[in-house]
Length: 616
Image (cartoon, rainbow, N blue to C red; front, side, top):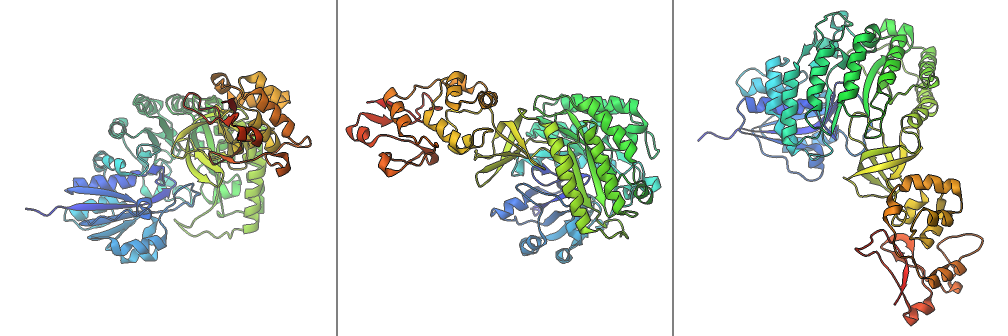
């Protein structure tokens, strides 16, 4: 009997401009490796992520072990991050069979221990090695690409985020239309040559397979410009083909995904062909989920930097693209976000950069702000010498000051514009508790980071009412906000409430309606804002009120100078923690001793009632 051929895939996560693979994403590269292994005759392919290993998952014994890891573009992550070099060194002794590594981790010292180091296409190299050919460096063919994506789709079910909030990245084409000119000085995509484009039917077949497995969220990425998808024009600035884009996204929208998003677009294409681009943008806005972002690679507003680095678009072209995308995509969708917004990429340290470059970049962003336009994401980073070295040495103080100016002058204004006060963002996935804060995001490309100023259960979806903005995130409360059941900490976070008024609300609730709540707050403007957050919750819940005797006792027991939940022992009031939350129940000890009153905890008939007293 032939020995079983097994392949272990260790996903250390990749994060590249053309491929996202850090959770909640799963990269197309790791899925193509799985497909290549099965196509080459593997009996079993087992997927293990670095997060699984961090939590104690055993690395499986295998005939072949492939590690994929590395981020060519540094990012900030919420609940996970790519495998570190130290982690790679620590797991190496546990890897079985012949061992291959790929991704930017292949350039680290720890990679030198592996049997094979692959920098181009690990799926093609693995396939060649398992079929008896030399393990070399070659790109996959179009036929292999489509076949492997179908064969490798099943490993998504082994990911720790499956089915939610996992996002499967789907590639549309590789290469760059500007390959003949050399492309941008810092980018490796033009080195892949003329674009190799997958047909709409092949992409839809992969998407259908993923949907049948249970994937709910996808992003069409891996391309330098989604507006140019399907174009037969071989020029550096190709004329878009709206019919190809409509065929692709019309098919995707009919499959019932929760989220369909895209990635990059070339502002030069949009500005040069506004008519065709308008058709493409309208299709994307109509067929995709709101909150969608088209990242525009301006890189620099300085004409000298543009020329010396052969960048793809001028600041004037980027501005034209920003205006058109805003015109088409600013309407809000069912999740509460604008349907389609631009993003801006700025790279510092490119050839030709001077102090004046930073002023030009900031002035460009100010112009967007002053025209009342919206930009979802401004990504500022220093150039990485992936393709070649650059002569400019970045002044770190100037770079830091520039980022701070953008955050304070531009980012906050954009957040207030994108998600103004009272916006209800639907389906925010709570990912992390940090102290008394909960952080979450909607599923999709570059989603807003939402802070909820109290703890809620993670790994669940919530609707969030937006109340405030930072420089890089926004704040909100769960919606509808149940004033009769939320903990004291949650009440304190409400605009216009604060600690004293929150304590008063705790003492006087449950509230049976808006008038009851307005009387307790005593400020019509605060009440009006609060009722917006409460929504229908207060109308649904009409719990029994506390007895008049108890209310009179509480009113007479409070300090007249301020309202809080700490009282002197001489007042004859005991305090205790209710359900381990910071809500105090106050009972006259004399009445408690006589057994004439008892505290009433929430019962199954009315979960919104957090406290009150009834006669026994």
